[in-house]
Length: 357
Image (tube, rainbow, N blue to C red; front, top):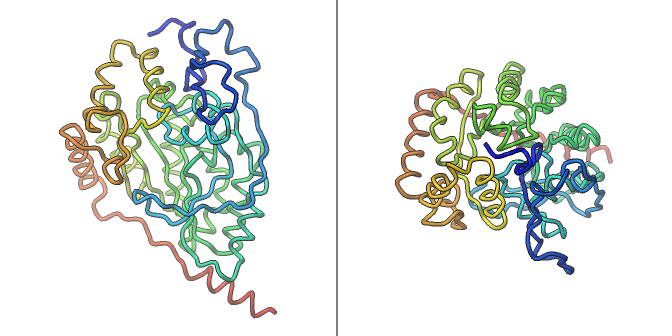
């Protein structure tokens, strides 16, 4: 294990790469906060909540790898600090770093629920499942303070509109009352992300997320209350957690998950630099082996931009992981499937409202 002064605990990223969109670059080298004296105690590393004022909240999904047409994010950035997170690369568009800034400068869209309602009540809007997340976790710590996610769920319920929630935080259970009402009409699915069953590894990979035990309990609680639960075993990181795939699949199946998926880690953009720095500090003896395995699954690179392949990888290592996943799904999820979203209720709701006029 690295010495205490060489690893910044409580955060994922250990460096702050310079945003390529910054007009003023004060230091061409990424700031290595783990080597700064008393870095954790400085105001520089405390979480800031910055209010933004977007004009729209629903974003069309153009990726061939994502099966939904729309997504929305009530926050930008994520305090969970998952070291591998692909969404880190969006923070530089706001003038911040994909490293520690992504975890400590959280952009808050207070008017998200209002914008959502304005969109759903338009005559031209056609019901389609909305992916509630994508560039953030809607139940990250900020949600305890601002409650924007709950306000948006209330809008989805009001307009009888389908929504898919993605999270790795047990805070989702706070909103069981709304989720149960949505589930009664097949208007909601919840996806829980689980990366490992090893709590010590979880603490380093995802420092501010719910514990492994909390996440498994969340899957079970959602299932018990009739809410469809899908579990993403993601990302699979060769050399770190691929050997857990079978055990993870069984654990979530035993707790009532109706389906599972997986994706291969891909370290595109600044995420590659951030992940490699983290790995060499936390596991210096295994770093090269893990990085080489990731490269072997992406044609010699840490990333892949090709649709389809970028999520599942290629080569022998990726093939073995895919085979393990197929076997796990056949063994533990035979006969299980997620229900289809109800797209009709929203149209009926709008029609009934128009009759009032």
